[in-house]
Length: 219
Image (cartoon, rainbow, N blue to C red; front, side, top):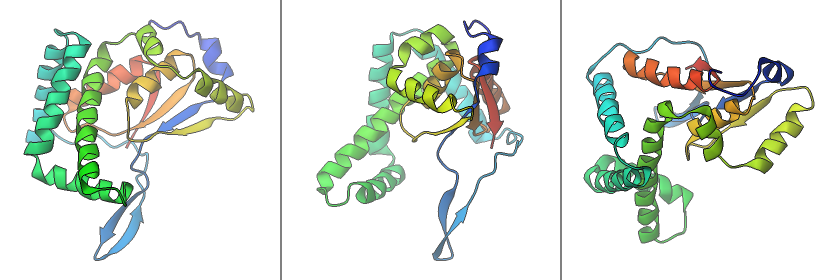
């Protein structure tokens, strides 16, 4: 990994870790019944540029340029405001969140579920602010930003058996930063990732992940 203290010898001595995000397998309704579909880890080329992909790329550039010019605390404040606005101005998404939290927080008052849904939207926007900053972080900054000494000790104990490990993360928090910090500590890491619609944005994000030391398997 460029700019990292990790040596090749460290990487060769350690079994590999595989980080898999949510979505595989997924369950969806089909003609009134549920059936399970499994996403493969096959390498699928990015979807061609369309309006959605181009919008994502341009939005990324605008947000990235903005966050580079303001302190992180101010960036979080902007993200929180965007999350609150999105919650109240996105009826379809708000209904979906309410339905999801009705299952997760079954038995709790409706007002509580809606408050949690709004905070979830705010926190997700804060994650997006971190995600936009991710390509500009050095390996040292990633390691310094991630705690979890006991967790890395547990991972070491598993890898000492001479086998690899599969890490399944929740769709919660900054998993890119966690993966980058893990790779920067010298763990050989293979990560299952989705492909962005715009090839320019996909190359930007994939490049940042690879520079952090991750080996990518595209869905």
